[in-house]
Length: 121
Image 1: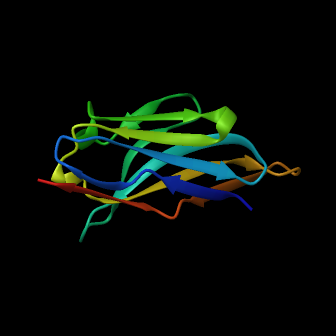
Image 2: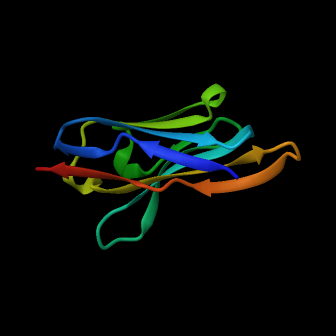
């Protein structure tokens, strides 16, 4: 069973930075899509950034130029570097990963448990 463990959330003042990490375990073979989502208070969960299998990287307009998604396939990890944080970036950040795992090379899609990011003005 594939498990995602996130870390790096916290509380910062506006203009600060945080780096989120998401590490997958469970005999991972290949990572395909890796995404970060955010759910702000009272709002639906939205995609913040993603890396798709052909290497294309996409960002939500509101975070372009401030957030950077990256991944290390050797460590089965995906990261989100967040700079110039704003109060509206506050929310629960969750990673979502698809890929293949196990001796039978089965496909999987898994969510992390979520990590809270709070940005104060």
